[in-house]
Each structure stands twice: as structure tokens, then as C-alpha cells.
Length: 246
Image 1 (cartoon, helix red, strand yellow):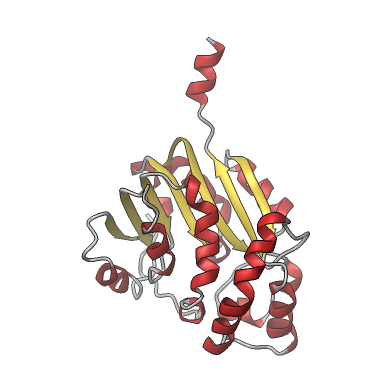
Image 2: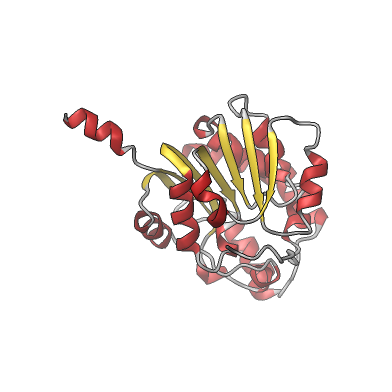
């Protein structure tokens, strides 16, 4: 059993809470893969959850949140929504009891010290054929003061993330870099200027004036590198394979 005596001390959740266009871009890209029984691992304060719930396919959304200081905010925010349940704990502990259609982890895996254990737990918690939808920070070369302030353990490359998913038993449906322009901005902020937070005005400006056109461009052409990696992976349905062979 993993201890839940943990409070999140990073400044990331508040810094990006108003990046509504950015998160809408991510969840819109995930939308056709979100099933009726969905788990959000590391739900934070519910910024992503609001957008998940707007997808008509979600009938039951289980928040799994380890940080004791975030759980009350989640429960208050979604108290009136009968589709939502909030669990204070870790995916690794809950996985054997789940049979989810979808597990979503947006900017979560980079916080997990033993990320392969998290991915194996996600595999366990999904029904056969279920989808794992992930967004993580990319490019170790731009790891800097912002990552440390946000309690990031790492940033990923596409080969490293792919290898971890395969080791955990997943098949990968889609994996690509996202937010190409953000690479330079993150490098300057975290490696050159040594910043430890993102100003609200900066987030609003980027979200309002850059993300709308950038998301349209990258929908057509994925950049060769990006600030983040977007992943859709699937737990193989071995039953279907066995039936087809029979």
C-alpha cells in the first residue's frame, strides 16, 4: 500500500489553470478514445476533468489523486456531478479493483519516481482493449529550473516513452511530439532565465494568441520535436485474438 501522507508543493497546477485553449486542444485530441468508464490518475485540482466531463461518452469518472491538499478541492468542485467519484490515493493501489475503458494522465507520469510501475498499474486497471491516454513533458535537454519547481523527475523522448509502454504490456496507437514552439520558450525560461514559475499573464498570452493557430497547424503536421509528447496506447484484447484464431 502506497502512503497517502503527501501534499503537492509544486506551483504547476496554479500556473497552468487558465490554459483553457491548451487543455481543450489535448482533450479534443483524446476525445474519440474516451470511454464511459474513465479514470483520471493524478487529477490535481480538476482543470482537465472539467473538459473530460464535457465529452458525452463519460458516464463514470473516477479521480485518483494522491495529494491530500488537492482532494478537498476536487470533492468540492464536482460535488454536484453524480458521474464523479474522488479517491485519495494512488493508481498503483487501486488498479486491481478497476476495469476502466480509459485511463487519462495529463502531465502526471513525469512526477512519478517509478514510472514503469505506474504504467504496469494502468495496464492492470484497464479492461482488455482499454486505452491509456497520456501527455508528458518532452526533451531532457530543456530540463531546467521550471521542471525542478514543478517537481518533475524527468522529461521524455519518444523512444524512451515507447520503450516503457512496451515493457508495461501496451500496444501504441499514436505517439508524437506536440507544441513545437514551446521548446524555445521553455528552454529560455528554465535554462537561461532560471525561472521557477509561469506568470499568469504569460500563460494567458500564450494560450490566447499562440495555441489557437498552433493547434490547427499541428493537427495537419506534427513537429519533429515538441515541448510535450502525446500518447494513445492500448491494452491488447487477447480474448479477441484467441477467438479469431479459433
